[in-house]
Length: 126
Image (cartoon, rainbow, N blue to C red):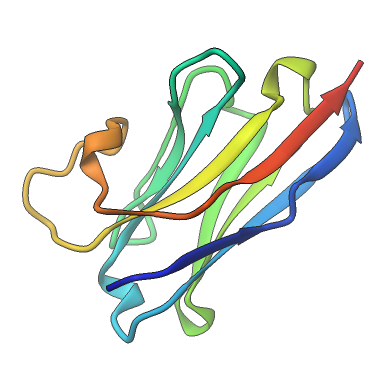
């Protein structure tokens, strides 16, 4: 069983920055692929960013490329999402997700993950 706890959300003005953190339980965090998704009111949950077991491989939604950066610290069992140049359309609940096995991983799919956090609210005011 893997537990994921997000933090770092809040209210920020457009153009500002936030850094989300996701702390994971488990002794084998370095073997998990990790992702961030978001869900705005009335919309489906959508992919934001992911990082593979190999730290050198990252994936981003087109809407956040160049503004968001995903990273991980395996010593701290934590994955981060640095969000810069925030826009009102980035407002959503942000979820952290973990993939604990390697076969057939589709980073952009919500079905590509077997554990999810509870989410943290990000609100960007105009």
